Length: 170
Image (tube, rainbow, N blue to C red):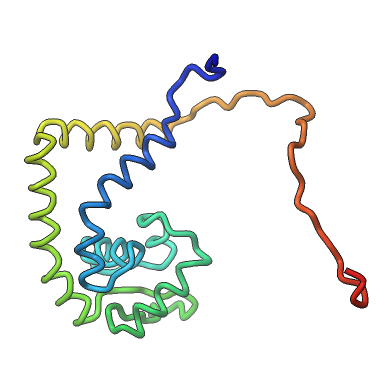
């Protein structure tokens, strides 16, 4: 069978690499009862001290509609606290609560130890090169990349079916 696209499926490769990497950290997160989203939020708050929810969305790659629920659960768990910004009551700042800070103090050495094990297994240089390549790719993408011109009319493969239930008529 011929290949219609010569380039590698980079999004798929990135997802696979992410999954391989996270497989090393999921047991730690599961041990402490954390989801990956909660972990990403704790980590950025530990690095930045306090952020607005929109900033957390950007840094953690979490969609805004999900963020409100995740933050509410984390606040219920007493991992974070939210406070209004003086002078603009519409804006909120999020920071680690004492329990979240203590949890990060417990998690940090375990996460660092796991990173060292990964580096030992794949090599420190490969790990550093991978990190630098990913950061360079992200930086390059923020520059102008030309978009191809799409055909005037695309052939629609599938449409969503919308059904109406009219008086039990199905």
